[in-house]
Structure formats: structure tokens, C-alpha cells
Length: 246
Ligand code: PXP
Image 1: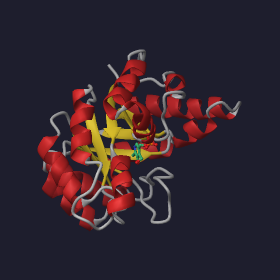
Image 2: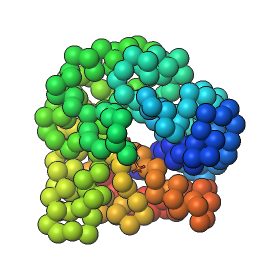
Image 3: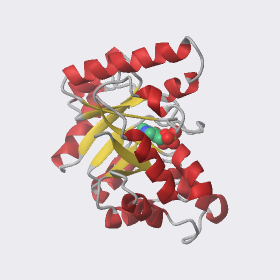
């Protein structure tokens, strides 16, 4: 069964829009995580960015206390954040690239040119019992490098696929890249997650990609929850995900 990790960063985005720098404020990220889990989410994902634009340190510690399914922390491979993550002890970490000016994580991690530093971090995390996923563009050289690093998972960046949705031939090209990368990852012993820009409309097309274990979805679920509530938004996504056959 395809699993859903709900990325709750944008619950914090909404709070920070009004309460930046304060120790209180709504909506409550921890409460959101509880509702997502009660609605059937298989995991909760959050990204503690270096610039703290949405999720704050107190949020990751608060999430650690309540999340019963699986906490996935997205993080840049920088000492400050690695140390916090080692202290929080999520079940899994997804290492992502981070640029200050970007609106969201725009490209995948360049594992191929950073094999040594990513391997070191991967070992520190694994030694603490934390699984490691690498957020990569669907490129064979990045899949290859991820296997060399010894990661347990790759998360294939579906941003280009989402942008191409409804445009031919681009959408077919992007799907093919994801299929090729997923097959290569599977043959290298890597488990395959995917995420970024996935929504209630483009999801079904992604089902052409084999070996998917989990999708991490944030913005579209939080947007839908403005109208129907976060529990219902999660349930609707899970309902669509039932049709996936790997
Ligand atoms: N996966 C990763 C690694 C991400 O960085 C993000 C965005 O924070 C997501 C998934 C979720 O993307 P979206 O909010 O577009 O669903």
C-alpha cells in the first residue's frame, strides 16, 4: 500500500504570517499532526529550514512528543540542523538542498558532487537509528550516488513532473524520467519515495511510476484543508492513493 506522509510546514507558514517571533500562535502544528494521524496519515513530515521561515525548533520537539506513526524531518546537511535532528531523533530524515532565496525546495540534492559529506551525515544518523532518505532529481547519476552513500531511501523530486502536468510532450518526458529513476533505485536496493507539487489532480498520472513506497505531500493538502478541514483533506488524498499498484 502506498503511504502518505503529510508535510505540515504550511500550517506553520500560516501561524508565522501573524505570530512571527512569538512563543504562541495559531494554527497549532502539533494539533494538526494529531488530526492528520487520526485521519489515517502514515507519517508526519516537517522541514526545519535554516532561516526558520515556517517550522520552528519548538515545533520539531513538540512533534516528536506526539507523532506516533513516523516523524520525517527534512533538513539541509549543515551542522546546526544535523545536531538538532540528532537530538530530536525522528524515525527518518530526508536530506534536501536549501537556498535562502527559494520559495520552496526547487531542485534535488547534488549527491554526486557531495558523496563524502553526505555519507558522513548518513552514518551519524544511521548510527543513532535514524533512517536516511535523499531528495534527488530523477537522474541516474544521482540515484547511483545515493546508493554509494548508503542511504536507505531516495525521494524523487516530482516538481518538474508537477509543473509539466497537462502539457504534452513535457509530461510524458517527466514521467519517463521518474520511471527510469525508480527502476534504477529499486535495482540498487534503495526504497523509493516521491514528493513535491503533488496534488489531487496530478496524482493519478504519477501511478505509472513503479516501486513507490511513500509520497510526501504538503501544500495541496493544507490548501484543501482551508475549505474542508485538514482531516478531510488527508482522507481525500488517501482515498486517491488506494488505486496505486506498484
Ligand atoms: N518532499 C520534500 C523533500 C520537500 O522539500 C517538500 C516541500 O517542502 C515536499 C515533499 C512537499 O511538497 P509540496 O508542499 O509541494 O507538496
